[in-house]
Image: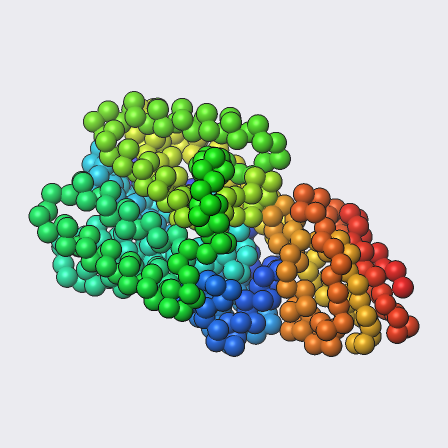
Length: 462
């Protein structure tokens, strides 16, 4: 019957609806670095902390003028951008199917499924739930747009204009776009047109030009933050981090490192299975595995947390290829549709479950920030405050690794920002207990007050 072909789309819509519920931006709040960077953006400072991401900085500045101190507005923008990235990822996967995988019969269903899977992918939680994580989303949006236009550059001149503009915006958004010229080099060997070298020359010329501009503004090309171990030649460390980045692109964070080995082993089995079932498409499958591995290169020196979500924003672009490869196996395997559908639903349930856990941790971190600020607000303006074991994060969801004085200055009282001293920070591997007790308190004396953050509650000593 005709209506049966719409059943998969109905399930995809339900899955997306559940993800929208989990992504709910309204319970979220500002966290840690947000207070520093929002302050800079509202002052129109576009080159912050030796970072060259003016597109992201401009978006934060626009949010400030629209939403001010209402955190939900910034998070709503993140969710809106994530939707755009997922749609563009769907369009890009359709182009990939048409160009490289004619063996896939229902290319529209494949593209739509890829977009939904990318939308609900649990490893995107940091990029979506954390305001400053949007730099990864913006970088991916313009990277997807670039690839979509670049693959169609021979059809019309408008695609050339689009890929040039998109590439510039991607480079001005996030360092994940640095791999795009390498993508073009890989694609060069899969094209037959004689003029393909001209487009490759255009891309590399633009890339070098932006690097010159980057050096002019921030006086560095590769800083200590994103390239310290690379500059020092710590190859063993880089290899370990690369392995963890590969594994974390397919599996969520965990507490026991032994899972990494099982994850990598499972991944190798999946890829081997991929080669077997694709038969004549093996060479093209290798292309996408290569693109996936290349997409991880900008983060070698940064690595990723295996005990929380911190660093998952680095996976935002690479996980598009993770989704594509996983679906390539699903669509190419010879099995009944009902079995493949059940496997996909089970996998989606797993992603949504992890996404829900990550979202709960982010909400808890934001709520803890709000409670801490409310508690300090009860103190006299001239009170000297000493802070001990200030919580930094909750399973990677940032609380106050930085930004406490800036938060007080912006949301509470500038005088309290001047009178607070942070003595020590709580270990990041010791999360707070849920719920966390930060009851409001007051101090009448003009002496110093010590705020000590324990596992279950904030303790006050006068």
